[in-house]
Image (cartoon, rainbow, N blue to C red; front, side):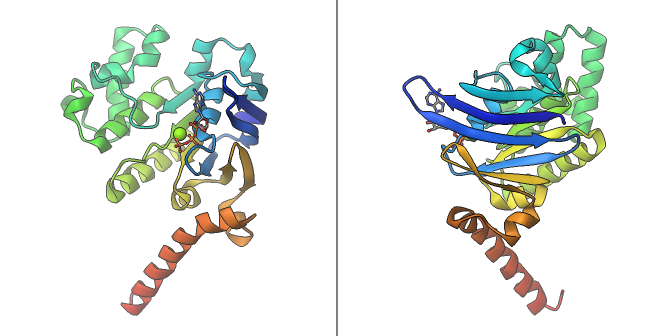
Amino acid sequence: MVLRVDALAKTFPGGVRAVRDVSFTVGPGELVALVGESGCGKTTTLKCINRLLEPSSGLIEIEGEDISASDAVTLRRRIGWVMQGDGLFPHLSVAQNITVTPRLLSWDAAQLSARVDELLDLVRLDPDEFRDRLPSQMSGGQRQRVGVARALAARPNLILMDEPFGALDPITRDGLREDVMALKATLNFAAVLVTHDMAEALLTADRIAVMDAGTIIQYGTPAELLAAPAGPLVERMLETPLREARRVRDLTEGAGHV
Ligand SMILES: Nc1ncnc2c1ncn2[C@@H]1O[C@H](COP(=O)(O)OP(=O)(O)OP(=O)(O)O)[C@@H](O)[C@H]1O
Ligand SMILES: [Mg+2]
């Protein structure tokens, strides 16, 4: 198992119980989606996994090791993080943004430069064109691609993604999502994807954890959720993607494209 989260809880000072009882596992090459409405505790869960936040209780293991006992720099080498928004440092070039973790790990200049070119190729940005640009000199979709490249930089076995495709138009979003899925298939990393979008979770995840008010109200494969939604909230979240899928099917059948 790459990641095991067991009975995680996080209460913030002041008493907000952001996460109450969250348990899930992610195996090599698997993607688990955390889906739920704003404020249900998705980002807090990810931050506990990356030790940006200290859990109030519960256990988090990465490759069998309790992360509360491991060194933070070593931990970050094993975890890639694609932040909500693109999360790039605005005053750093693309190359500098991508190499933040490798530099912490003291890679030498030749290794860093080779890795920048390799990663830009992987996320389909021309290295010669983009390596020296600032984030402000790129489109939102290009910035998100740099965010994905940065997360992959130190060859982590686990990638945490917080709404990585959130602010993009549908076509850019779909293209980047397909590319990330292809990278996952090639590099075989485990991934946790946080999203508001149930359609995105159904299309990308091996398993989906539906969260509400800090707890998981259903945990299963896309097929299991579709076959037996665990309650009215899950039903409501499935309604839109199902309705849209039906409409598109009717239209294609009507147009004779079956
Ligand atoms: N540092 C903090 N101090 C106090 N409360 C916090 C803090 N960070 C988050 N919260 C609260 O914890 C709850 C969960 O927040 P979290 O950021 O995990 O939600 P989320 O599911 O990621 O939402 P969104 O989809 O809007 O990003 C919210 O009620 C939020 O207000
Ligand atoms: Mg969030």
